[in-house]
Amino acid sequence: MTLYKLCDWEENRYHDSYGYLAFYNSETGELGQVMHWATAFAGNLDTSAYLEPCGVALEQARRVLEANIFKRLVESDRQQCREPEEDQIQVGTVVRTRKAVRNKGRALGPCPKCEGSGHWVNPNNPEDKRTCFKCHGQGQVQGAATGESVKIVKGTVGTIVDTYKYGARFKINYTIKAGDGSLFRCGAKSLRLDMQTKSEQHWRERAYALSFHFDFKSAVTKWGGWLSTNWAGRAAQGTYTAFCPHCGGDGRIDQETYQGQGVAALKCCGHRVDMAEWYAYCVEEGQCEAAHWDREHYFTPKDQARDVAIALEDYREEAHA
Image (cartoon, rainbow, N blue to C red; front, side, top):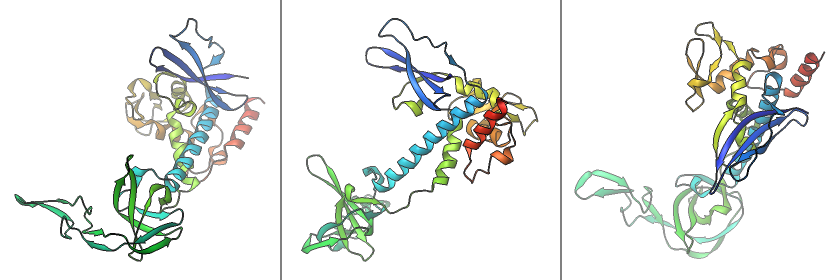
């Protein structure tokens, strides 16, 4: 079993600070974290057994990170579509009922605040027109509930035309205009966005690009902290490189020029590049230690799924032949 240190960070808590280290276990193929120092007690963890990643180990860890990012993106996309937060549901949002609800009939009428114009006009300046706060620019508002209770079936599609808060905890209810022009009200728990989740291929491509930022900290903890050392990013300088298309030189990333937002300069000519795009380009071109094999055989185009398992197994056989 070989353990590779990927990055470490410091968490400043109320009384003391704690240092954590993210690592990759080559035997289990998993990422993990361990506390290796703290101001709360004496003595530090001996990290001499943790090696710096290089070559195929770095690429293996990156692919585990890619799988982790992909899983989170898919779960987040499904959560946002099927159980949206209140700030995602605004006036004009198209929604669909997740379950049947019951409402009394309601009719639309002209807004009493703007007289149906949808705008508030400054009495001192007729050119100053603003959206009416009562009807949100719709020009119409719903009247009082009348008639018998009506069942709104599951899957009814409509557009949010008004929101209002009620109760001591300010719960939010929404007024929805269905396709037939009828109005009904319900809460956020009874609604979902009227949209489909994005395809898995879309999120695989997104996860593939994001994994080249080598943000292993986010994969092993949800807490904040200050990144101290990024051994994976440092190793990537020598592991992933391609000929610079601008000057033809050795296109290695100069980590000292990194100023956040994933942008840095190449050592050869100083041309600034997006680090994720550059690392991805290097892998696709086969110009890295962990991907020196025939890229056309092992790496499919970006718009297709990549069979990473076969590539790694074949590489292990070549490396230990």
